[in-house]
Amino acid sequence: MQKSEDKLSMLVEDSYYHDLNVKEKISTRANVVFTLQIAAATLIGYLYKNIDYYGNELAVVTVSLFVGLAIIALVLSVSHSFKSFANGYNYCLLPTASELLQYNKKLSEYDPLNSSDMMANYLNEVFARCSDKNSELNITRSHHASKAFLRMKEVVICILLASLIFFTFNLDLSSERYKLTKSCTSEGYVQ
Image 1 (tube, rainbow, N blue to C red):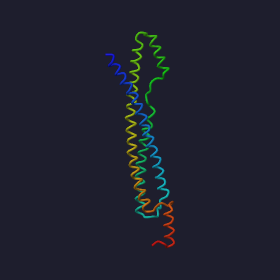
Image 2 (tube, helix red, strand yellow):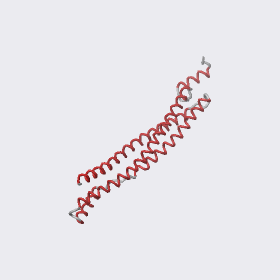
Image 3 (cartoon, one colour):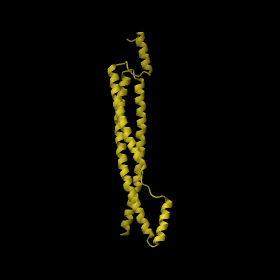
Image 4 (cartoon, one colour):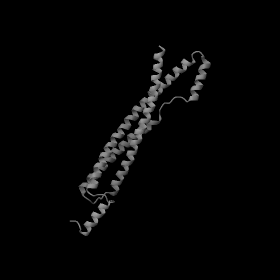
């Protein structure tokens, strides 16, 4: 009977530490998505700042459409990232070492013969309670981190399409190619 209780205690303890490990993995994933969001916002800003609004009208409208869709997807991605980050600081942790020692001392004073069993039961209850709460938080955070990542895929696709049109139709006001093309057309050198 004692072996099955020990195995159960080990399982509950492993579950607690597994949930803390999953927490760190979700945090890493959320940070990667956050970095991608900043990069996407920078690219969107570059496209809007440097687009030649007097260039090919269809190309300008198409780039603007894709950038607009990218902005919508980016806002949704940021929203999910915020929800993932906001839930990241409510984890249940074990009591501190000094609190555990103090509790064990009080148990020893209360019932010296059964104090070790009572302490083991207390720890099992704490591990189980914390593991349950942390598991719920991980599910919620993982859901939002996944949604944020999926929205970032949409953002990347929209930005890639917008950039392809942007550069294909030479709409980049800051590029040397644009300046060279415009100076040649104004001087009548285009063949």
